[in-house]
Image (cartoon, rainbow, N blue to C red):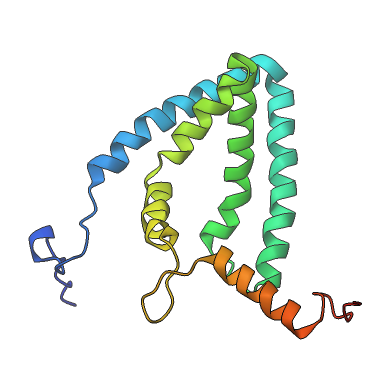
Length: 170
């Protein structure tokens, strides 16, 4: 019999690493399921069953062609996520259309709030926030882009050339 590897408990996790909290994902899943169900019912109400299925099939087919062509161009491995992405995009479009039929422009707000509240989206924002700080030079000095642009224009004028390559005429 092959021994099973020991699964680390949150207490024995690597220091500094954030422990995943399944309650956060479960709390997000409840409003997401409700928004999806209401959106699908709204799409059926607005477009009928045949129209909703046609919208789902059309968007999924368009997404399938787009995703597979981009994946082929970027040499991405065609795994399970890549295969399920077109269907997810189609369902998302049908749900959004259903909410827009039921609540008008407010439907977009509801769908956007649920999408932006997803654990994945919050993790992306958390990773990107440190990159939004002002740029610093390697010496630790902040880069003032306006001052750099003014200095560049001064250098160009002192050379007697206009930006673009043609010499300036006196």
